Every structure is written in structure tokens, then in C-alpha cells.
Length: 223
Image (cartoon, rainbow, N blue to C red; front, side):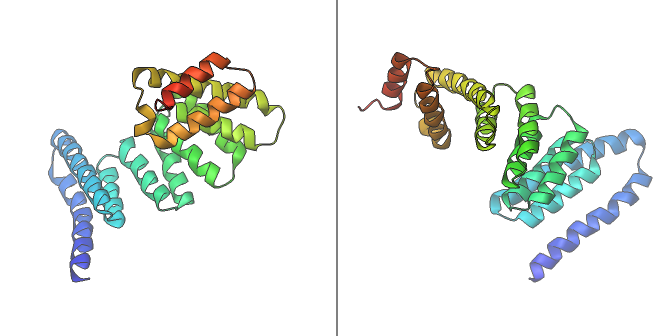
């Protein structure tokens, strides 16, 4: 407990010293110092995350944001920490802030979509994933998640949208598999998603029987 209090007091002291340092340095030196300090805080945050010290990681990320409020990374990383801690509202706030800093930061849209899905805000999640796939069309998981949302929406008009999204995910995953046959061994959750997509597309007639068989042989070489 004593060590934890000392650590927290140390972080608070750093926050207090920032304003003093700002007054003492020239604009050029201050800018360089901010960039250096921000980088150090981000590194420390990463180390704390690896140790499972989420509170300390969040404090370091806050310090990084103070040093450079226009840096989208620590804002996004704060959202990730809150998301993995199941603090959905706080995570959503961070992802929205990251998007306001950089509207092209596709990772923020992806995780915002996950948060909205977990909050059962389906329409908003669909709109967010649509933005995510526009910014990063090569992310098969975004296409898959979008297809799942369309499927769960119970709207018959979304059937084609779901099928189109599944096909996009299928094409990307199939290409990855052609370059690396063990791709889904290394990414088992994606492998399950790929098989689910492949089965649905085969059932709807969107992929041919021979293609289905060849992929089955690739995915199950022992058979």
C-alpha cells in the first residue's frame, strides 16, 4: 500500500511540474520536450499494461495526452484499456475523442463498433463498422462483424448487405490463406469465423462446390 501511494504521488507531482516547466522553456525546446515526454509516458503505459497494472497505465496515458493533446494514440489506447475492463461508456468516450482528433484513424472506428455492439446499439454499430471498412477495406474482421450485425438485425432488407459483407471477408481471408496455409492455425478465432462465412456462402450458392472442397482440404490437410 505504501509503495502504491508513493507511485500515485509521483505521478501527481509530475502533473504539477508540467506547468512550471512550460513557463521556463522556450517554445522550440518545449515542443521537443513534450514529444520526448509523451513518448516516454506511452512506453511506460505499455509496460504497465503488460504487468496488468491498468490504473498506472491509464495515469501514464493521461500524462502523455497532457504533453501532446493532438496525439491520437494515447487517447485510443485509453479506450482499449477501458474496453478490456468492460467500462463501455468510458471506452466509447475515448474512441469518440480519438476520432475527433483523427477522423481517418480506422482502429478507433473498429473498436467503437465493438463497444456499440456490446451495448446492443445495433444501428450505430452498423454505421460505425461501415465507416471502418471504408477507411480500411482490407480488415476482414470488420466485414465479418458488419455481416453479423446485419444478420442479427432481423430486417429482410439487410440480407443482401450481410451477404456482401460476408463475401468481402471471405475474399480477404481466402487470399491470406493462399499466402499462408497455416494462417488460421495462428488465428483460431478468425478461422472459426472464416468457416462460418464459407458455410453460409456455400449454402447460398455464392461459392462453388469445387472451391468449397479445395478450401476444406486446405483447412483440414490431415483428411
